[in-house]
Image (tube, rainbow, N blue to C red; front, top):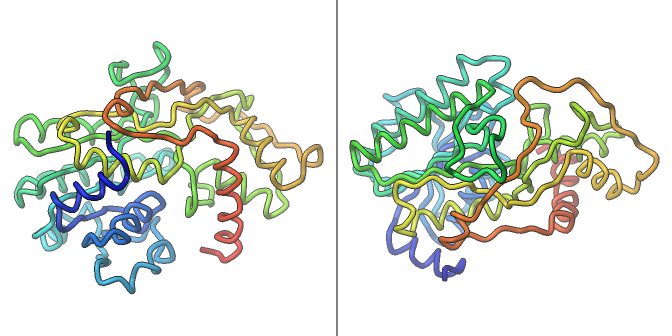
Length: 330
């Protein structure tokens, strides 16, 4: 049975230097933080289109941390950064909200950028490649709960481009024998989440209430999400890096809980003491928005992953931290 201590211990035996793409982003910065705090040499690679230096500046003083400014679409620059890297946590991505406005950019980042990294990982004999994907590759559910055998029929540009990235990852595992693992994320929330209109719904709702605004719900609000705490996602990344069973595998990296957007709205309003005083604004459905996420996470749990399931408790903690984060303009 893996524990956090045993995962870190095994990780330090296997890897000396880790590269985190999108290292200054929401999830990437938490991975960097965990690695650095455990004395692992860590390189954050980010082009700062979406990432924020504020997310990683507390790591600057550590001798185990290095910041690199680079775009994963620039292969010639990437070549200079990957020599000596033992493991890559590929977190850099174009978000779903960006894909609707610029599908070409979405494809370039999520597919071409991933291909660039894989080619160089193969060239430099990187020991492990952990790829961050998304549950959006499934599309509308054909059966529930969705496990990893579910048909892949994405209904958004984002889902299509992320699926293309997955296909490249699987190809390099099978043809070039690169040690890869794919993690499909679901509705990750927690401290440092982007709270602008390109961010996650948890952070946006917190921002709304903090600014005295009414939250906006697209559709009826009954759509279900499997909100997953960011620290659990970090540990899942480290777990698949050390567990040999994860080689070449794909996992749903999700809490498995089912929370509706309406329930989230009510919890956030209640946390701000605004119950009965603030009502959300309802707008039309967003194209490509999945109505129901009912996720089977048993495959990743079977290799040692654990997830926070007390959503209300973790949400309240997140709200307290995010209020300071937003007020400081971070």
